[in-house]
Image (cartoon, rainbow, N blue to C red; front, side):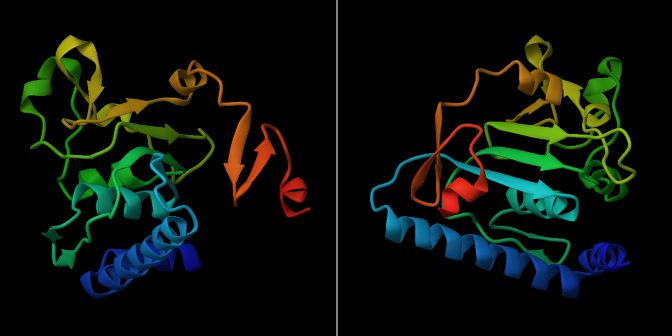
Length: 190
């Protein structure tokens, strides 16, 4: 029941502003802590959103530095490399808000105005049994060269496409320690 209320709150301007400000504040605090702990760090930043969080992250990226429908979206203090979402209702909201329209390859020229998602790639993980998750594919037009695009400078990748990506490095950084790939959280805390 709380999840439904969160969605309703996010659709109202007053509550959406509070939610966006809270998420932005937490992101800023994490970024500031990282910069303090690792001066001169120049790695890439990836964002993850689940369910309503995926819509919030998408909105924050698409509208950063702007006021859109009465909500002021902050600008991220870093460039976002990739966005990962799962259980995302974002496509449904994009259509309801008339931000995008469902297009077929043949009528891509009639698509909605461009929507920018300033990141290199956007990964959408969907479980077909999840009633909230929606595919981005029906809202994609075909860019030059046949690559899917949400009329933006981002590459959308399906789980199948992501699985074809090169394997991750053998060691993954986690909380200042190196955790062997496939390691457990218990090892991290030890």
